[in-house]
Length: 427
Image (cartoon, rainbow, N blue to C red):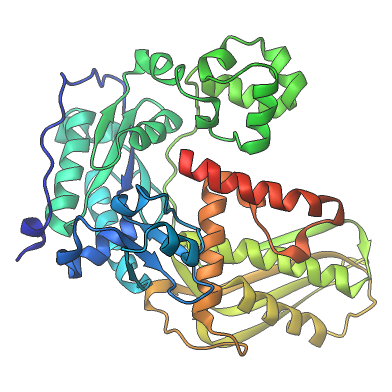
């Protein structure tokens, strides 16, 4: 049976087509991507609750089918809880190589439409189709063509939002899931946005939502009608202005194609020179977390880890180590970076800057997997990907290693974690 035959085809969407004049931004998002790819090999599981993730006692949910989501199962949830919520679910292990291969094929479809493709992850991207209209037709027709090609060539479905800005296009794809197409006319952006809850706005997390609720703002429309000065007083100048612009459908960001990275790194200059090795190691951990997240987001793994150490007199040294196998795990990067720092003999030397970089990159799906540092790598991989899922919805600071949580923030950790679960169900 072909992929095309395996896939259930929904009926046509009701209602007349919306005016797509000026709506040249598309946001394409695969539907339950990991699960959908797994079902290509297990078509007998279609229509049943399926969970992809680690099956061990500390496993986490990487993805859930829509049937499983109806029971409250969602990504980044402990697998033990997911099993309690949906005991009849079929649990499948994560197969990153398989997902990377399907993702690459889907992105080839995108690039056959336009070179202006901005990938956000393995399963979603922005496209600017302004230059493709003469060749392929109106934006809505291009979106429909992409959905059909993804379905017919890869056997999975996607949802597409079509709008004049990136922000509205992304919201539109979310509102038409699964397997939908939604056009938000350029002159109808505020009609679409204003009934939505303020949590729909990009950048509104739990704390910002609470601050807005305290002043009586629960919908995007209420926020839009609030004086900018009031928003800036309550939220700060930058956040207030940012949300005010979004509430009126204004988003100047362009679609920016990514070129393949030769390396991925991060560095930090201290406010004052640091000679405490524990502080340096803590900063190496923070940088390793950032680099690992960027590697996973780009779908890459690297074979060489390097550290950059700049002393108070501006003398800079670098140290590098090539690993036996490529990695995208922050834990592996951190342990290697610490070993390089300790080997440099700079304990007690005042440092003004430290950096961590991973080089010799290649597709993560092609990287062999093995046990590392006396721990099952799969467990660490599942934990870090669970953190990625939370960060994708609530920002990178929403979850972090305990070593990076200031003592003053410790009492807030439980509240943030509990709010994350509730918010994810709502979204």
